[in-house]
Amino acid sequence: MSIAENYNKLSERIKKTADAAGRDPGTIEVVAVSKTVPVERIAEALDCGIKIIGENRVQEAKRKYAVLGAKAEWHMVGHLQTNKVKDALTIFSLIHSLDSPHLAQVIEKSADRTVDCLIEVNTSGETTKYGVKPNELISFFESIQDLKKINVRGLMTIGPGWAIEDAENSRSCFRMLRELRNTIGEMHHRDLPILSMGMTSDFEIAIAEGSTMIRVGTALFGPRV
Image (tube, rainbow, N blue to C red; front, side, top):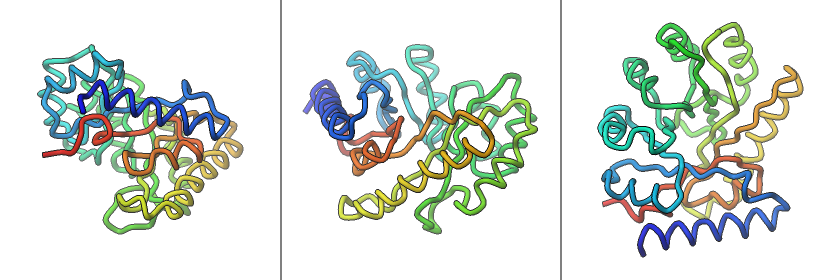
């Protein structure tokens, strides 16, 4: 199918899932993850109505941003290496993967503006994944409150594995993230509106559990080659 057909199908699935959960589909943003996707196909997605592009690697994003620039909002959805922070800050309006005090300090020192960030939480406990441990999230959040250039807008997580067979595990991970967000919000009287959770294989589960931002690549661009 074409990107336009994929986008229409994706939009229908989001609406159906949101309706079933008693949610407004308009409150769920789509981040089109364009890792390895050519600029021409990204431009096609933007023509279909996609507004946010998510990239995993800063160097790849730089090449694409040079062509597409302000035609989209750009989000960093992959692990951000500290030596790439300066370049990242010239491209991305939201960093989904703040996951360590060291990275927070590097962003603070490198930024000439307030940087919107999401704290990445490893809700699945998988050693192959980045992210703050759930039981360390509150202390991490509190440790960066004095940083002037970091604005935490919510939390991000990656569900366990990629298979749909992990539905219940995915649900528990997404529910955990929502509950952690609520706990921090109540403790610190902070509005943390963004829950970035759900990808092609599990975004419907994530929406049912309160996701406000899904990160999809395959569902929009097709399988990576």
